[in-house]
Length: 417
Image (cartoon, rainbow, N blue to C red; front, side, top):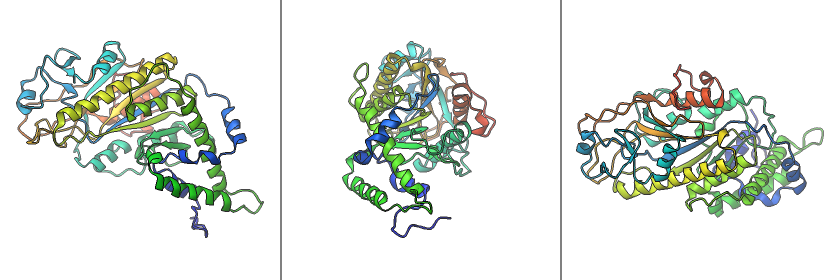
């Protein structure tokens, strides 16, 4: 075990990452990267053009599934939600019995165009209603009674990306969260991972990390041969990667405008990085605010508008770039909401909910079984599709990775790809 360096600087790669990848993205430190190193990485050969990419979107807070995919022919839905239920003539038909929230107009067009699959009633046995714990279960791809040390994306990287050089500049996974490295990315092996996010708005944290990097650049000791230690190399790798990523995003001009939301801006950045043909296999972004305990109606509609319009702009951009065939985008939320509304015209923490899968290669339409709503007040939904089946499908049918290496099961793949 490495002892802390006498200067107080981090002495291991893990400690460095722990102190500098807390959602700040390192975008504030671009001025330190030597231009000749940036030019050398920008001139690297592009990866193969048929590399498949997965984009994961977290709907943080617990998305209300019943007002996202509305069971407009079920009288129990209207019984359980006397004020929150959406009128049958307002929903956007996705089938004979279900339709999308009217705020999902752009997603509805994707559904009609054969580019959107909706997996119904997704959850897991013995559900947990804690935001933190249920998110951990989803991100680690584990059972509710186990605490896995690695995430499902991390296990994919361990299994499918083992040949990537450990000192490669280009990241295999990129997150745009602003809240630190997603637990999904935790792996047994070391992989190039990069973060973009909310740090630019946090001047104090940026300054602290700037001072840290300056100290590291000036004080990193040499080894017995006089060469820079891994610490100095890690610093340089990070700065070179940051410079390249910043340039790619700054120079990008999408085929058509994106909406003005922060979420859409994240998707624009992902499109830019995909267009640059980085070897990145997984991107991760977040749309927050779904914890709708009160006044759910307008809040939920606004969030679904952001989601719908952002995803549609992203898909349109990928198609203009002729890269849509390489990208699969899917959403998840830590849980759904209870079927019955509460006294504050909101919904409380529940269990299962639908999720979206978008791409030019999906089998569009509804997948899985709709929930049974013959319930008493404050009863929860019983899930019909295990979320690990969704992961298994993404691995087997899209990323071409044995699902057992990512979500030990077995979990039978679904038919949405």
